[in-house]
Every structure is written in structure tokens, then in C-alpha cells.
Image (tube, rainbow, N blue to C red):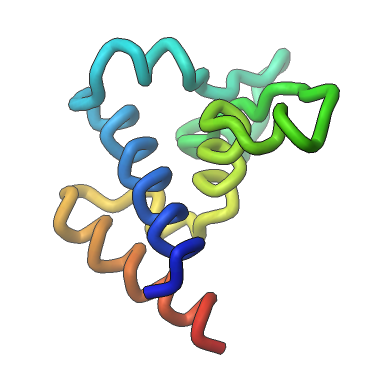
Length: 102
């Protein structure tokens, strides 16, 4: 697996653990669930994270609080809604292999 794929894998598994409730408290402080201002049909159970606004590309967009939600939100719906960690990791690895080896 390329290095960037491994980074994406680790960030995505941390986000999955955040949604399943098995992440440490300090990760819960770094990630926030997106909640729209008004009720939308598509946002009932999307499992989307809020991407924070950054001022600088050099430092702001390299942080975990920016990269992890960006990576998580870019995953297909069926991967984000996996029921077990094993199924999630299997689907994520397949997705990343297709993404980086095409």
C-alpha cells in the first residue's frame, strides 16, 4: 500500500471508531458531526463530519482535524455505514487499493 493510502486508512479507521463510540476522548474533541441548520432529507443519518475552516494551506490543511473529515466525507456511503469494524476495514482497503492502483 502506498504511504498516502496508509495515512487515509488510519484516518478513516479513527473516524469509524469515533462514530462507533470506541475512540479516545481526545479524538472526540477533534471531530464534530455535521448538523445542518434546517432538516434536510438526505442528512437524516449520513455520518458526515464538519470540515473546519482553515486560513493557511501549509499548516491548517495538514492537521488531523481537517484531513480526517475530508477523507471520511469522501468515502462512499456503503463504506461509511458498515456495521462492524472488520467489514469497514475490508471495504476500506478494497476502496483504497482501487483508488491508488488505478
